[in-house]
Length: 483
Image (cartoon, rainbow, N blue to C red; front, side):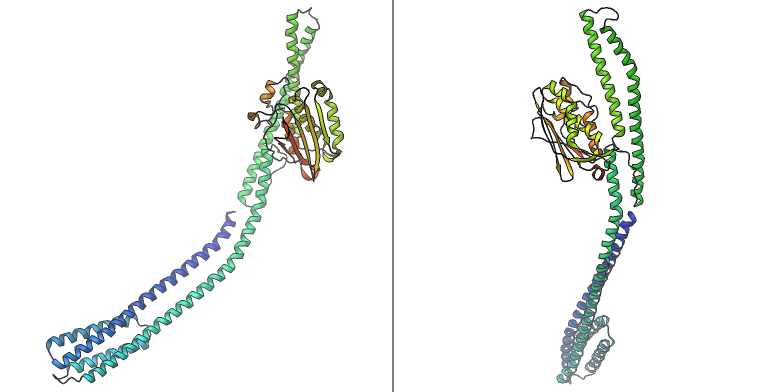
């Protein structure tokens, strides 16, 4: 994965570094050109000023021939020589340098002429003519210097255009290459990430039957191997727990059977007639023995359900006859509780595990009966929605305590309502419902607002062979009764 990111980043970094270097070179060249142009312009301006000053000093000296004026003339001549030497360093072409050298020769000729003139014999027109020639040479040097600067500016502009074209070509080449690299890395990483996401979802839902195999970048493959190790470890722990439950349940059943048998003998008067107090105590022993036996049998059933929850025995069957069978099995309980049924079941044909669907219905109905008041009503409906089955089971009982809503699908959680009610369960019914629905690729929800009590809604594929695949999906644990 790091190699893929490097494939994307390296070309971009190279392009950015190259662009930065080109911009730096162009900026440095432009700055140098500006500095030299300004220096050359100042030197040419100083040269014209020094020529004017030298002309005035030459004319004054030619007329008066004093030592003071001679000193002035020499200082102006030296100043012009200094400016000319400065300008010479800024010139690039041989032609402009030759012109500047000719200006220096003419300056020397004027110097000799001025210094050799007798007093009072200076001809102003001749001096003016020679200084005009000097000025013309200075103009020519200025034009040649400006031409050099213009040529360098044009060359810089051409280099700028070339650099721009180069950057455009680099961008045009790097953009599709970067897009291709991103797509390749996404495809190489996306598939193993989806596999990891599915594996984590299955592990979180307690489904350990599918092997985790991740192919792709080494980092993700290593993570896949760690998840496979975790899956095997969790599977071992689940199997150990199931074995522990089975062994402990069987070990408890033998002494419990003896206790119940002894209690029955006492109740039958095998050791003598019991008075009312003794019969009351014996009745308490008998009732709690029956309750303890039921709990042990539920533990055995829970262990068996968990060991088979990840596998589906797929068959095709109609839902309505199955619901009718479940209701008939609960008929006595419904009559004793005087509970009214409101059943609306569409005649849907399912492709699923019939036994697990039956247990889902039995547990939901048993949970609804348990929390319905005497003379209450239970609502059960099933309808098809596309390729999904929507199953609703609701009661008009006391509802769900807020502190119970986050735990109702946990095994052996009975909740506050169960502790205070007359009918106490083992807390495994809803956990079995969740596991079996997940095994079909469905979800369990609790709906608020439609009924006064708990309203369970199950959504699962009509055909588990194509929609469920025996994998677990997480379901929201919002509100529920504890079974």
